[in-house]
Image (cartoon, rainbow, N blue to C red; front, side):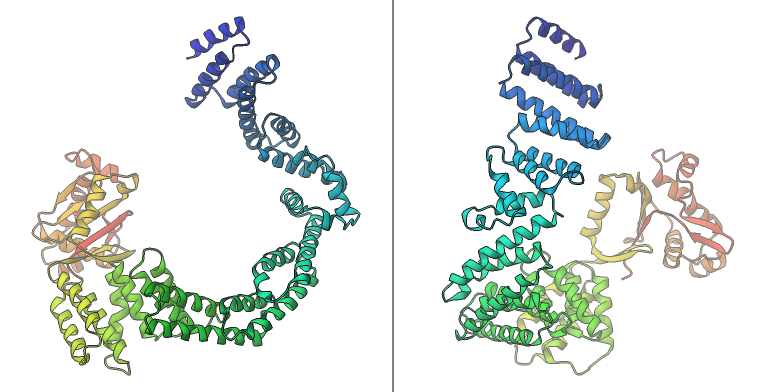
Length: 599
């Protein structure tokens, strides 16, 4: 390719006005850059010379201008990374502004000028300089803006719409107080004019004025006039809405919420808003009972009500629990993060009341959805152990059916059916027959499936069926990753054919005694003497421990299975069992998985 470039350069000498030759050379240079055959600096300098030379021949060549602008932009990025020289950046950006109509070059140049000259130049001069760059075709704009900013010429308030220019100035110099205060005053002036000429109903202007006043307060938070005038006007709107007998409730809620943003400690406003939201809750429930709204609308509207109530009183247990129940119900039928949000709220409920059984049960159900049976069992089993307490009928039924589903997933199907029978006996009038039938379908499914515990030693565990475990092992074996070199699986589902699955092969364990030793060491992770191992594993011996330490591990960590010494050397410190002064200790450093039927 270098030879081709040299040939094209010779051709260009004979025909310097042929732009296509320059494009071909630039393309070959770019390909060399991508292959790392030339440096970025060399590519940029050569490409820049190519296009500059052509513009000297044909200054109006638009495509060449675009190509040079692209090169200069890359040069600017490289300059920012390697040598952040502001003066050089300014010169490059000035040329980019001349070459390209893209507004971002103008904005970037304006930012550079603000950084470079704000200490040495008056704000008035700097403003004029920036506006002339941003709006070169508007010759008198900088004069008008400066009159408004520095000479308090308020005639511009009515004559010109100068907000966009001031907003752009703030984007260039976000900390410049003069710009922010003047723009806030301008927004305030516009809002006052609308408020003074507004006729009832006033609430129709609420959303428009809300946006304007929020901008005022954000731009100039120290000026209390804006906030006070806004609150005074909101009070008038609230009084108007309070006389409408339930109409425009949503607008009234928004108005009260807006007032509380600026008067957070006003208990009268809080109580008023809380009462309105409770009334809204009753209205939604009535419409649902009368079948006037769909389930989707019912859930959405209640979620909206409780989200507002929670903002009013973030520590209210009833509000948190009600919102969590809605999200949990919604999460059963909709994709998304509703269950995760519900779970966090249930955790908040338990922090307020650790004995809240409905929250515990619903958290367990979420774990069941995620096939996290161990976590679900740990939440529900203590409630079963408590026996009969003062629980409502619905909560007791939910406890029985949830527990039945959980223990069915750990191969206790007959016991699960017993709990379902208890639930059915309790539901004499059949009110909860659908919930019981749903739980029975889950248990029926589990009755034909065997489940196993997959324990990640020292980290966590989960319950999976054969399909889930086979998929886990298949992904491990078929998609080797660098991190898989530090993983090992002990598959003890079938004790007639126990296996070790490692990064490079699968090893069958011919001795169930080895299985016993491995399981025993993994269960404790504390050092075990040979006598303790023999006592727990009847035929255990030092030779067996030695095999677990060397041969079995070596054969799943080395591609050359026969070369045990090389494999052992390769594994080095990642041995399974280490001879410790107080006994044999499991010390394999990678992730270790134990798959057993012991649930």
